Picture 1 (cartoon, rainbow, N blue to C red):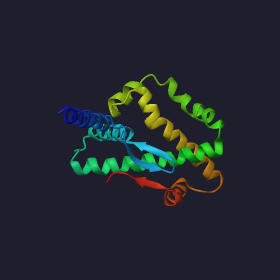
Picture 2 (cartoon, one colour):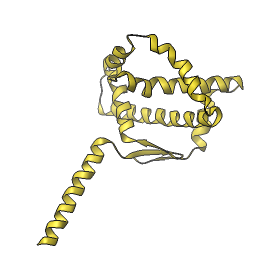
Picture 3 (tube, rainbow, N blue to C red):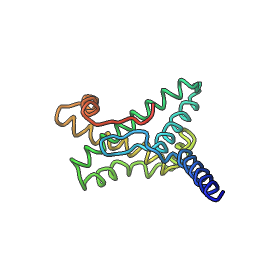
Length: 169
């Protein structure tokens, strides 16, 4: 009887622990090189994109939700590849370059309310999810165009050579 109770308790606690992990999004959905894309990040970005589309009056059907989620995962994968290259090329100077680009937004008093209204994000989430990746994209785009290359071509090449493992369908 005692072993049965302990076994039941272990399964019960393990089941609720697993449920908590899944609900919190603390599981990987993709691995890009050695970087993990977590479900929480994908879910939050997908929610922001869907909020934006809903504000535009789009009908959010299951098919639209699936397509937006796929597009968001592709965008996050691109962001990982861009950041990896910038860290390799720019090193310590990347932070200063990002700060220079992002400081123009610090003087916009309506940015926080606009981010909340359009995307359902607070200002910090908006910076992390939208503005910083866009600034990183701009930095790489400038660097590539100085060498006569296009960002889209670079991304296509990187996606082909990068190790990307999708852990969900």
